[in-house]
Structure formats: C-alpha cells, structure tokens
Length: 322
View 1 (cartoon, helix red, strand yellow):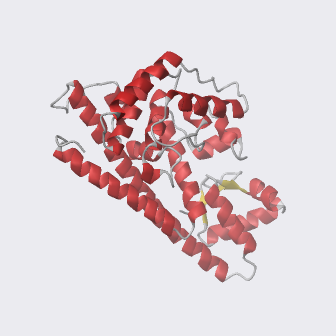
View 2: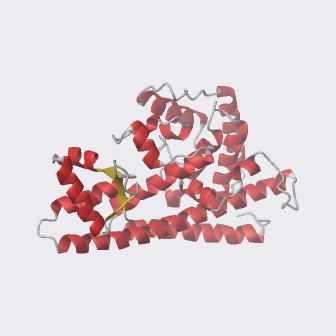
View 3: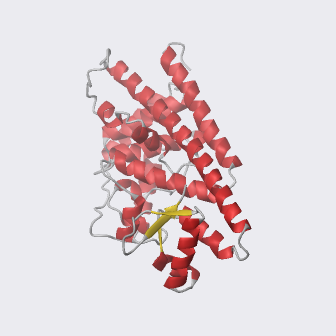
C-alpha cells in the first residue's frame, strides 16, 4: 500500500481482512454449510434491498412471488435480476463484462409488469471503465480499489436504476476473501447493520462530522466506510455461522431421540433453506396431507427446530429457529 496511507485506514484495512478471513474459515468449518449459505443469501437480499431504498423481506417476497427457485427475481429491484449470478470473469470487470452480466441475466428472467427493464447507458459505462482502469494503474490496495470501483459506478450512473446497489455488488466481486460465501451482498449487510452513510458519501453530502470535505477527504471517507462495511459483513457471517451450528445440534438431538427421523430432518432442511414454511407448502414438497404436514411442523416447533412467525394466524408460517 502507499506510504501515505492514513493510520486509521491502515488499521481498518487490517481489521477488515481479518474479519473476512474469519467468515471464510467459519464457512469451511460449518457443520451445516447448505443451511449457512442459505441464511447468508437471505441476509444479503434484505441488505441489498435496503441499500436500494426499499424494504425487501424474504418472507414478503415469497408471499408475492412464490417459492420456486428464481421466482423472487420478479421482485422489482435492479439487484434481484443478477443476484447469485457470478460475473463472467474475475478481477476488475470491464464494460463488456458488466453489460453481459446485466443483459443476459435480465433476458433469462420471466417478464413482469412490475419490474421495469434495466437501461444501460453505454457512454457512461465506458467512462466508468476508463476511470477504473486509470485508478487500477495506480496499484491501489485491492480492498480500496473495490471501494473506488463501487463508488465510481454509482457516481457515473450507467444504469437507469440501481446504480448504487449494482456498484456495491461489482466492487465486492473484486474482494477475493468473500467469493466463497457471498453473492454480492456482504458489504451491503455491513452498511445496513452499521447504518453507514454510503449513499450520502456517494452524493458527497456533508453530514457535519467531516473535517475534510475536499475530494481526497471524501474519497478517504468512502474507503473507510467500505472497509467498515466489509468487516461488519464478515463478522455477521461469523455470528450467523455460530447460530446455525447451534441450531444444527438441536436438530441432531431431536432426530436422535425419534425413531423415524427422516421427515423431521427434511422439515429442518426446508425451513433453513427458505424464509418461512407453511403446512400447505410442506405437504406439497413431501407428498403428504396438509394435516400430516401440520403435525410435523408442530413437532418441529415443540423440539425447537422451527418457530412460528405468524402468532397463531389462520395460515401459520414457520421459520427455522436460527
């Protein structure tokens, strides 16, 4: 890194690297990797939606658009069309890669009248590419280069909508330690949980707390916020991994004391993989009656595998007790 790198940012850089490495390590050590990855994805979608200025809850999303794989991509937010779709190439993405990523993902999803198309302004996208290429030539530290890439995408605004959130996803794609467990929203988790003023920094708004509001000063603040966000996202993954592992032990204990445990295990898997579960949906997935599914869910609830999230409404919904 450059010799004039500020001391507080240097410390933040080290803390961020350590937090991201811990998240990667916890994923590798997890006793229930599929459940952990599913829960991370849920946190990411909620955080990305928040960054785009909307409340995007997975349970509401499932109610509106169904539970089938990819159905939630009908949600009218820019990130939903490309979330969980890896970029065609690693490293610094260029204009062609970004265009393909957005255009091909959009073409694959079913049209929805509530979801406007993402319009790409090619001249702005090219300008963003030139800006990032010039910045990369300065051999900036990787985590900071990612911050600059994300901020520049939002400020050049090459899309009709969702520039800030897509910028964050692109920036994160350059952060090697998070690739194993993120689909583009680890930084968004940190921004959301820490209430970091990313959008305000992109707009160069002075919140009254900055001593230096020059262009270099604002760049430094954006980088510091980015580092804090990634670190908080990594810590959130570590905490979620701990909770998933505890829940997995509860599931194992519950199934060990039940003579026929295969269906109870399946209830646990389905509850962990989705925001919520109903008796009707469980019955369809397992090929059993709704009454039988209700009994299974009640047993899972009594054994602390799932918890009811509808407070006794007629159409009850359950979520994994993680």
